[in-house]
Length: 291
Image (cartoon, rainbow, N blue to C red):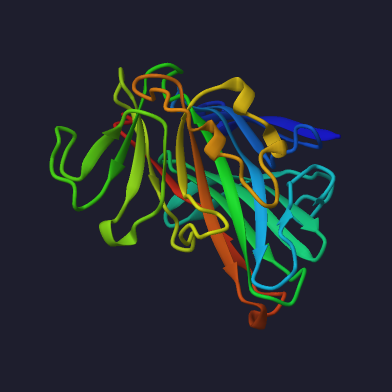
């Protein structure tokens, strides 16, 4: 089973965002998959989704791997006849398009939400409540962003650290030339950017305030990979014990080619907070030079 749709938002006469979405079951389960997303008639994503969600407990429970599917999505009071809900919001003085689904997996309650703002920002979010076992745990949410800003084939990826001198890309920025994985560094305000080498449009990738840092169970926070169709395994990526992404790091060039970014947020839930406390993770994607 599956559910699909297309959106021109906020209206055909003012088309800031055009995109398609889908929510499917196995073998294509990867949460809500956003495809062919365009902002102001320039392509942003070929596809963006949440293909992997791993759960790590401090005790003997688990680990688990919890794919977000059409089957475990449930109707809500906001959208009583659909599994995927689309609606507009007004917050912080801006309009936003929301695409979301509510899932139940065992004792977990999970809401995945994509918010596309009128200024081009994108907020991928995962909200979680519930205790499968009465122990502290972390949900490790892996988003896969296949950016094709102004088309595939000329992507450039950069990392920012306050300790990096000006190497020709502005103070703090340096380019990543080959496939690599990285961890967050709050002390150096580490963040990333992907830019089309021709138009110089792009997106910053800023870690969210609750996204945590890699640990021994989920060892990295960001992967910069050259696009390979065989590596898009939808919800079949990795296992409960291993995210499987290290195998994709083969040293290929990511300079002015088709690049995929994986990003992981680590959502901590303390058992003493109870099953009804909601938490969220997710990065902030911010456009630049998008005139």
